[in-house]
Image 1 (spheres, helix red, strand yellow):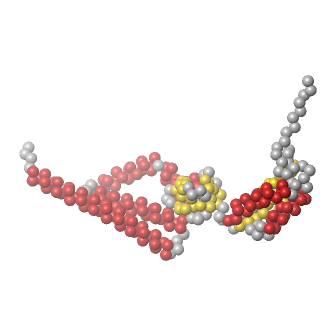
Image 2: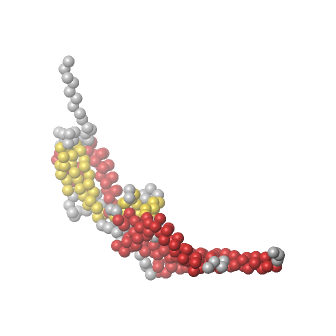
Length: 268
C-alpha cells in the first residue's frame, strides 16, 4: 500500500477548514447569544415584564440557544446530525431519569411563575432560610439574606413545601411577653406599656393594641402585649419596645424576675 502525501495534505486541509469553521461558528454563535439575551432583557424591561418572569425566560432561552450553537458547530465538523440527535435523545432520556430531581426543580419553577406564591423583591422564609427574593431562575430561586449572603434554593421544594411570605400583607402583628415579679404593681405595668404604645407613632391605632395578664408562671407574672405595625416596621418596633421596658420598668420599681427554686434540706 503506497502512501500519497498529496491525499494526506488534502485530508488535513479539508478537516482543518471544517475545524476552523466549527470554531468560528461556536465563537460567533455564543457572541450572538449574549447579544440576543441583552436584547431580550431590554425588550422585557421596556414592556414592564414581571421581574420574576424575566429571570426565568432569560435562563431558559440562554440554555436553548447555546445548545443550538453547540449542535451547529458539531455539524460543521461533518458529524451526521441525524444519528447524533438520536444518540443525544437517548442520552437525554438516560440523563433525564438520573436527574429527575433537576426536572422536578424545573417544573417547580414553572409552578412558581404560574401561581406566584412569591415574586422578586418579596421577603420569604423557606427551607431553613429567610431573605429577599433576588431572582427566580429555571432550577433555583436566589435569596439575599439580611447579612448579605446569597442563598440558592431548589424550586422543587419551594413549590411543594410550606413557606412564609412576609411581603403579601401590608401590616403585621407584633407580640411581646414581659414579666414582673409577684407583688409588683400590675396596673403600673399596664400604664407604662400603654404609654409606650401611644408614644410610638409606628404602632397602628386600628386594630387597637391588646394587653392582658397572660400567665402566672412559677417565678413571674407574665403580661402579653400585641400591636399592629406596617410590615417594614416590625423589627424596629419590636426592638424599641424591648429597650423601653428594660430601661423604664426598673426605674418605676418593677422588677424583671429570675427563675427561683425553693430547696428544702431534710433535718438530720
